[in-house]
Length: 137
Image (tube, rainbow, N blue to C red; front, top):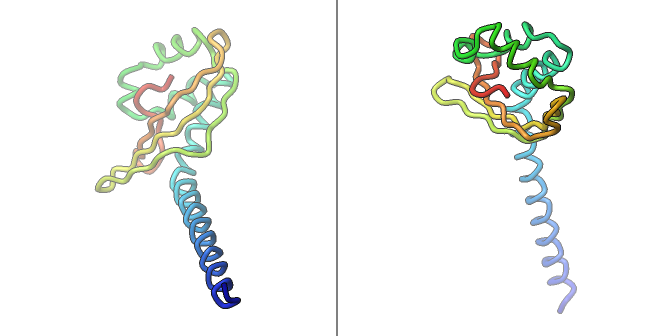
């Protein structure tokens, strides 16, 4: 094989590797960027629960979740098995359907009695703020 063909082949392999790496990095930044605010809202919700600020956590629920759980019901439910720690994974999903923004954020949640479990938090953007919706536990 001539020197020219070796340069062309190695150059094509290098270009392929750079393109694949750039594509993966691009996907990472797009996913990470679009889920940054929903992750922060999920973290705020879980931190409020961990620190016993039930009303602050309740205020981070979307209106339909607040209708499902009144403040007293929410507090009683939370106190049955308090959250002691959480870890939010890097991924998640984001959707914008005709201006209706929603996201799903995966987290590992540690409960005082039940131990660690995985949970997907569904969020919607309501009045300009990200709110935990669906099943918050």
